Image (cartoon, rainbow over all chains, first blue to last red; front, side):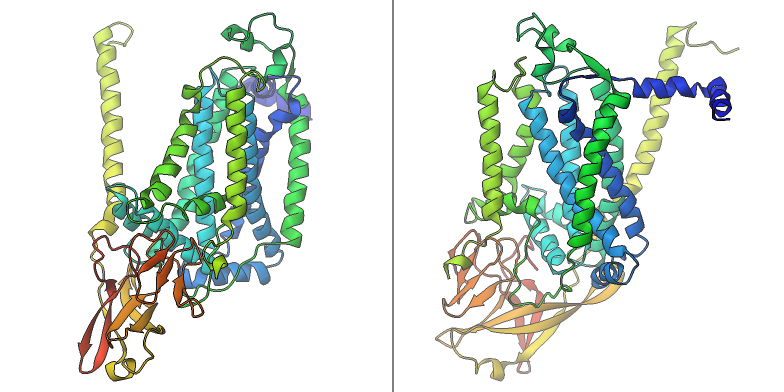
Length: 368
Length: 173
């Protein structure tokens, strides 16, 4: 029976050939587990899209109602708390795994020629996922959302020349209002996910186009010197994507999803109080992935220097990350044979962790 | 009988140009109204309204150098709704009896300030900005002193406008 259906399709569209073409990609054999983060991210994105679509059955993007509809979803919809929890913890996990994936690519030098464009496409995805996280935080409609919207569009207003316009455009007007929520909603639910859906295939297509490239340990048998481009063209051994690599991908996906599910069921998503613009002792808090930037904002006092923390340092950081494959152009891949890049990377990660750890602490009130 | 592009290179160029032009025309035609809807907020005037704060005689009785937080409610048009925007007015009387009407928004990035009575300072819970009771920056990253609401006196009643003085870029609010 199944055979017949398969033959019916093969006669017309060559389905088996198509599936074999997709599944047969050769993957370098040794680093299997290190290569699972990419598919893990694709998996997490699908989870976000699916849970997000069904959250929309209840959510209302209107400032006085957004928080209450989220509250209703969590407390009065059957298993709504789990759905909401998966969406929240899935988002956190996605941002964390993105950082892991980026670090892995960075330290193993996988962004080097001929894979520069993969890195750039990946950076586009990274930037968008961070904005998706921030806009999601705003959509809850609680007190933190209200202040996050205000703080972030004030940050945006410090972009030279066009800052004031950007601020009005993202707010949809001069006040934080109905239109602000509607704009953020459209950006979070339609605009950015569609860009992600466009860039994931580009990212994967580019990876497949350049073929079997991997970490330095895949090329131990090669007699060629390290600075020879040809050395990195053929790994010592490869395995097909299906089932060898997908088997590992699925095990990792299951493990990570189990953690997300556990966090969703036991911790859920905290909704917090309704926004109160009149509150006198409310201290807004950012999500963990924004704390490093939050800490940065505490420095650079005064009128002339504020632009460093709101615009120059973050955009310079992103620019350097985008341009990384064009800055570091050596052919050496092993992290042990390019100590400068490795040490800089480790220092940057330590700085990020340090800023994140102290970023949650308000600086001045601690001195009271 | 039309020629195929394989017969004539000029025909091929012509077709390529026409394909490109059609795409460009449709793309621009769709992009113009999209740009219009995105940029529309830039062409809207801010709805500036007055709200009552209280009698000037009552306000003059507050203790000097002790901020009093009084909420005002602006009824403004926002998009297709008329909404009430509750905002805090921080009334401060200095030793000469002059009244100041500050906003409780930090001038750094707009977080709500806390009044710490023991320190006689406004503190920003977000990035550690510090202001003294008369709104001067005494620590942290804020680039300017506290915003002061535009206000006027009308038959003994203080009216507040949803606009800050000396704020050309309309920050905060």
